[in-house]
Image 1 (cartoon, one colour):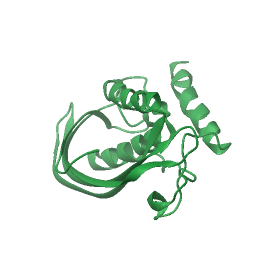
Image 2 (image 1 turned 60 degrees about the vertical axis):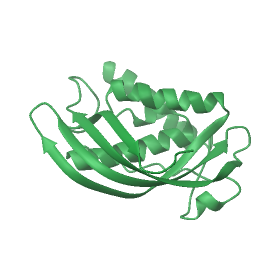
Image 3 (image 1 turned 90 degrees about the horizontal axis):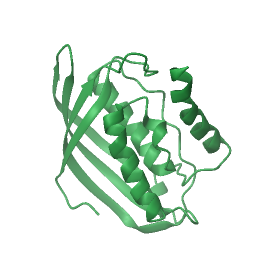
Image 4 (image 1 turned 30 degrees about the vertical axis):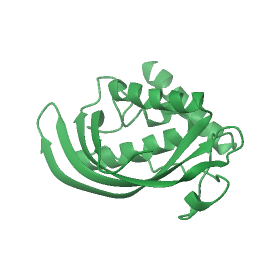
Length: 181
């Protein structure tokens, strides 16, 4: 019963997206330059088999959550502790009548340590991003680019979790290397 309750919001979000009811949409590699947002692509199924692949899946699904304003869509890749942060950011953007479209340009992991209870991945990542209006899907402001040094702490999913892998993101600490807008 717990598994079906946890999957229900994800299934609802996916059905809304398939019917065209999303906060914003994107498609091609130049989409950040277009005056209107287009269709947001649904990421590949989460790959949580290794700490590195779990981080990449987390970034893909959180980006999707930010663009669609549906935080539950990232819930299979992160612990509830981290999902509070993701949901808070989405709620802040909703209050400002905007969503965030972001695209990961590069991800370089530099350290991976694994123990029985957790894993730590450090990475340098570069993003392009742009906000858009919830009201009419028009872009708000210019495209921005920024880089971060990030540390991801991963843990095994809790017992009974619908998460498909041995690793989910518990906490993210990111230090910007450039100005963030």
